Length: 358
Ligand SMILES: Cc1cc2nc3c(=O)[nH]c(=O)nc-3n(C[C@H](O)[C@H](O)[C@H](O)COP(=O)(O)O)c2cc1C
Image 1 (cartoon, rainbow, N blue to C red):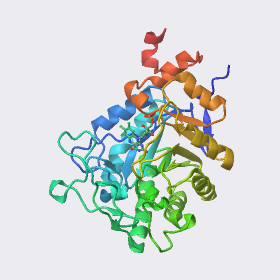
Image 2: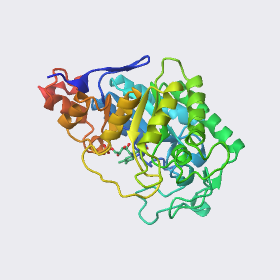
Image 3: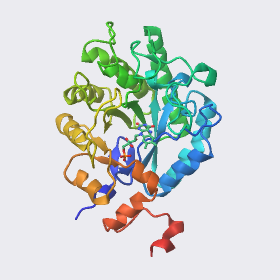
Image 4: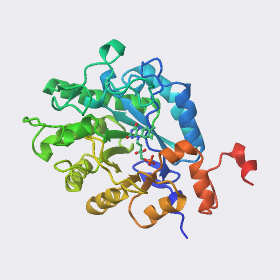
C-alpha cells in the first residue's frame, strides 16, 4: 500500500517532507498585548514541528493592531514581532518541518475577549484595552460591536499592511504564507453578501466582493520570492441561505489561481451563526469539489483525527494535504503515531528519541 501521507509535496520551490500539516491555531498567549511571540509560542510550535508534521502554520497573525481577534494575538506589523518569530521559524525548520504563517485581519470580529477569559466574552471595550473595529459595512456580527465601514483609503492601507507583513514574514525566514480569507474575518466579510452590503466597487457582484482579497493576494505575490508558495484559507460556504455557496467559492478560487495562489486551505463557516452538520471529515467534500473543478491543490481540514482517515482522503484524491488541528494539540506527535499505524518505514522521529521507538 502506498503511504501517501508520507510522500513529499512540492509547491513552487518548497518541498515538505509529508502531507500531514498543522493548521493555524490561535494561542491568545501574548500577555504583554504587544503582538510579540513568547516562550509559549516557541514550545508550542517547536513541539508540533518535532512531532513530525510536514509543515506547521503559525496562528492568525495580525497585520495591524486593530486586526487582532483579541489583545493577546500575535502580530507582524513591526520588526520586534518579526525578530521574535525568526528563532521559532529556525527551530521548526531544524526539526524538518516547513514553517508557514497565517496573515490575518479580524475586521468586525476583532477586539474580542479571548476564548478562555474566565469572566468576559464579546467585544472588549476601550476601557479594557479594546478598539473600534472595521468591516466592509456597518453590519455587526451578532452580539459584537458595530464596525466602521472601511473607505477606499482604509482598504488601500490594509492591502499595504498585508504586503508589509508578508515582507517581514519572508525576513523572519518563513517558507510560505497563508492568507486568512475564512472564518468570518475581514477578507471573508468582504466576500460574503451577509456582511458586505456595500454599493461601490468592493460590494454587490461576486467580482466586486472578491476585489479586496485579490488585491491582497496580488500585493503579497509581488512582494515575496517567486519560489515561495502562497496559500489562501477560505470558508467554502457560509452554511446559511443567501450566503456564500460552493459555486461562488469555485469562482473565487479560479480568480485566485490567476493571481498566483498555489493551494487552497478549505474550511467553512463562521461569518454568521449557523447550524453546521459536523462529523468526521465534514468539510473534506469542499476540498474535493474545489480540487476537481479548478485543478488547484487543496488542503482538507476539520475533524480529521485518525491515520487511516487522513490517508484515505489522499488516496481517494479528495485533497493534496491533510491538516490536523485539535488532534495535534492532544498529541503533538500525531504524525509519528500515524507513520507507525500506517507502517511507514521511516517515521519522522527526532533522532534524540530513537531509543523510545526501537
Ligand atoms: C485553539 C484553536 C485555535 C484556532 N485558531 C485558528 C486560527 O488562528 N486561524 C484559523 O484559520 N483557524 C483557526 N482554528 C481552526 C483550525 O485551524 C481548524 O480549522 C479547526 O480546528 C478544524 O480542524 P480540527 O478538527 O482538526 O481541529 C483554530 C482552532 C482551534 C482549536
